[in-house]
Amino acid sequence: MADAIPTPLDAGPTREARRRVRSKRGPLAYVLRTVVVLYLFFLVVWPVSVVVQRAFAPTDGKPGGVGPLWERLTDPAAIYAFNLTLTISFWAVVINTIFGVGISLLLVRHRFPGRRALSVLIDLPMSVSPVVIGLALVLTYSTSLGIFGDVMQATGLRIINSTPGLIMATAFVSLPLVIREVVPVLEEVGEDSETAAKSLGANGWQTFWRITLPTIKWAVVYGVVLSAARAIGEYGAVRIVSRGAEFNGETATLLIQNEYQAFNEAAAYAAAFVLVVLAVLALVVVTVIRPQESHRS
Amino acid sequence: MSIEIEGVNKFFGDFAALTDINLTIPTGQLTALLGPSGGGKSTLLRVIAGLEEADSGRVTIEGNDATALPVQKRNVGFVFQHYAAFKHLSVRRNIAFGLEIRKRPKAEIAAKVEELLELVHLTQWGDRKPAQLSGGQRQRMALARALAIEPTVLLLDEPFGALDAKVRKELRDWLRRLHDEVHVTTVFVTHDQEEALEVADQIVVINDGKIEQIGSPDDLYDRPASEFVLSFLGPVTRLGGNLIRPHDIEISRYEQAATASGSITRWTRVGFEVRLEVTPEDALHPEPVQVALTRTEARALDLHVGDRVWLRPAVGAQSVNA
Image 1 (spheres, rainbow over the protein chains, first blue to last red):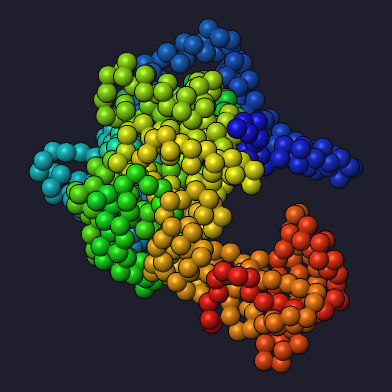
Image 2: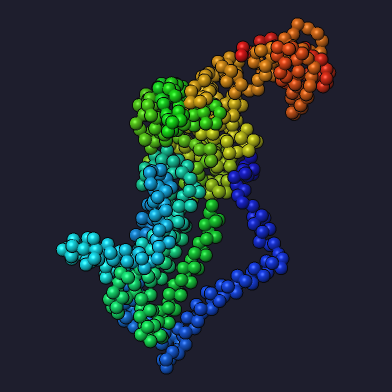
């Protein structure tokens, strides 16, 4: 048999073509490159590096270095704030991953009236200001203003000014991230292998665990990392739904703002430094995943 | 017995994909569903598989009413045009999939997989991922995967459509030999009449959601029931008001009792074949007639462009009055 003959399907987008584009050189290319590098430097690299530098520098007569930084971060208020941020982010990511994969499957594998509307609706959290989202949640779920206020007052269930509200707000703003990663992959791989699994006797659940999930695995991981980064850094929606006081709904981002305004800049820089490190970590993970993803398909 | 399809109708919105299909597919044979794209042949295959639900009618597989059975319960092997390989699993695990789902003992699965790897000549590729195989190999893997569950029927949807011409030809021969070995009732969809004529025991010609004709390859080729079947199964031309195959026309440089006469206006050489276009002098049928003959014949007759020739149907040639 013609084992060695590759089919046209094997070819894929030619690597040579991509290389040709990249290696196009000229004075304009260098000018553009310089502009982009300078733009990124002044907008991103410099300000962020200043934060990092300040985190280690002596501030307001307080000593600098790793030891004092560690001390500021292990302050009970800081520990509470990071703990709260991580708890909120964890649950928001869990919720968004489960619903995200479910909604993605619904959007790609099923045709139903209102499908396009749902697809647009999912992007809403991306375009609406997080502050508005926070306000909307307060108006709906608070015990005093909320539509269900009486019910919640009666049952003693509290959402606003408590952790569930924070999780809701965070889940809301990071809702599209998993979906927007998974949907294109599901669309690209098509339905054939799932249909094949079914024809071989697999039920819906088996097909999902054995075929669909391994196929979208990297897209899900990518979406989870993005969601986590977004959740950890969320400020606007959280500001509205949380009391935001020390040991009382103060997340890491709120801590930074509060400490900074209280002229306790050293603590603010320390917490900001941790957020920068987490963001960089997320970027590293994402960069490691990306090549694997393109290799797989 | 085997597959009985009775009064099947299928609509996609307003579009009638299948209209009142009645068909018996005999056990142990290789049946081709042949027809143009969009004619409904793939839909019929998917209705048999249970991937598509018919709007009305019944499907019976080996005496069991399968109309309401989901695809998982029909025990059919389905092979897709684009392989539908499980990309994250090795060739071995791909083939084992159906058996793992059926929770067969490990040793039994391993033995069965080895047997199938040998059958499809992929023994040394068992630990590879599908992405490391060629298209032909992937399709053989897909076939082994479908055969692993010992299906009642094997259904192939344009199985060689994505392959290049040479691999396609090889796989076609191989499928025929495989079928002689395994004897599972097989239905395959194709739009390639040559593929159908070469491989199938029985051909079902489907067009516009209706069955045009059912028969053996020889039946269809020699006794087409309609103009559509005649023209779909091979080239046709018009000689004196009748449709006839270009190679069924006798051509002569000498005056004789003929249906038409005229001069050779075009000469196309394709490999061993010479295709001529003869423009008749007949005022009633002035459109050019296509004639096909071998290079050897053309040389023996000493034919050239511009020569006056006489044409008549060869003895035993089939033609349809149209």
